[in-house]
Length: 445
Figure (spheres, rainbow, N blue to C red):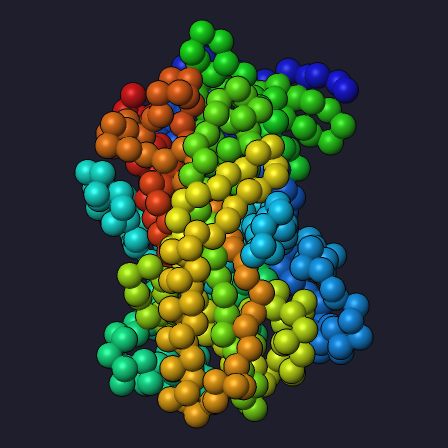
């Protein structure tokens, strides 16, 4: 392979910053660093430009009935941006999902804007200023109830009757543009949903450099200081020099880069497992509705209406017409037990996790019975997860510095790898706030 030296910027008065990843954390950190005027930022993104799902869903639904789709990993043939992997040798057969293009997983998220920083507050971390800044710079709305289907409105009313305190979920974006296409998690084609590409655009407009198709392999350090990174760019192995490195490649990839760099992580992986409870309900049209319109918050999981495309395509129990499936998601705050070993994911659900997941299924069952659907008519979806993190968790010792002592002094992490435990909730907003704090620490350092 060819090894090349990449020159980032000739201005010696401005420090060179490498930001690895363009998802929620990387984009937020890159924007703040570049706009400070103190750094020349280069964003290295392993994936390419994001393209939303554009295939004909009616045609695919017919093809599904032939048995053509039999393994969840095939989703990448239909939608290259969505990477699906199986957990290594576990009984749960859990499916792991993440985005691999510009914008990371934010492009294939439900666009939720929940603040869930309770575990950080327990460490003495106050992110009020960062959240305030995000609220000023990112469009967030609760105004989407006019998009809800009748079945969703009925579910919401039932949850209220059961004193479950359901609440509409705030959304990132302008949902007056929402067409109810139902493809929120396959990329919004109508610019209703905000994703982190906007922060990347802001950073580039301020002078940052963006390089896509550039997979960082490892960080090069000498005498306790990061000197730069090696990355694969096409057939070339390229070295990018840096004065500071921000690693935000996501909860699955950040640990691998650290391991390749000789930095060990903790076996502290959480993934926020998702299991859907569903039924055939004629004319539900949940497949033509925004994802996760409201949520019920429980101690260790949330419930939310959710049409699960993975289950729809690959789970034989979901062979009904898409318009006739009604589903409730159970999203679990799982025990941080597991890890990533050089791209192999090891993750098991503990006995407590399984009990809590069963509790969520039981509550969904009661909701559906009040809806008028018998327990015998319900079926489960495919167990999947897409919120990995926790493998280098913050402690009270790093509450001010956000810097683990095992890292080179000028290497920082700015993604869910830092979370001390599972949020059991959509993490995008909290990741961005945390990344902004990291960037602030770097600027003030």
